[in-house]
Image (tube, rainbow, N blue to C red; front, side, top):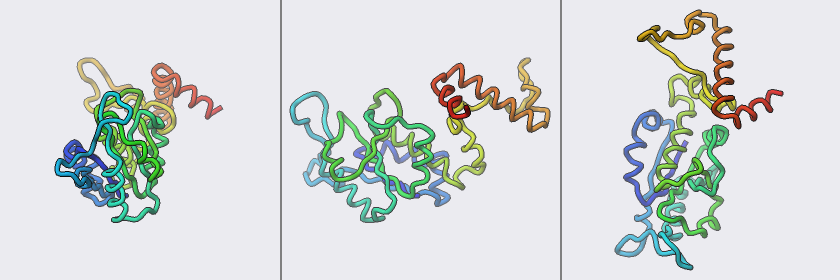
Length: 233
């Protein structure tokens, strides 16, 4: 997979993209991540990437020219095969595990990171950009939201995590929250690991885990539980 990130603030991204699961994917050559600095695609001496909004109002708006030029540069290196253009935005489809899985099956992702008040709407007239929201709240930069999406996608790529079964059995993959996990020691300050997990009976263990997943989802995310029940009826 190749991931291009269009940003006016590359320093927000550089350190996290080299760490943990994302860093493993890059080091193993499973994913290539290229950061494009919007300021490299400006023509004025101040390298301006934003301006005041037409019609007045608060905040600043990212300019259309550097974004389109940066996208053209990114695509000139790879072509426009099975590329998806993703813009983190409160207006977009809410990110869930189903969408993450679809993105993980795409060979080329291009993230356009917003900042300030927003992005000149005309960018959408040049490219088929999908807006994606990480939740019903506002953060200061699209870079942070892009990191969330990139991490979620990369951990599903074969070979990034040594135990891929761990990734594919996480919460949300079957519309259920994950079951509780335990490890050594078997007892700590009077708190013991559930006996069924020590039994060696895999059928009983799987039954217990499913019961716990249903119990947790029913109490904490009734919306997900209803979706789950509707699917199995």
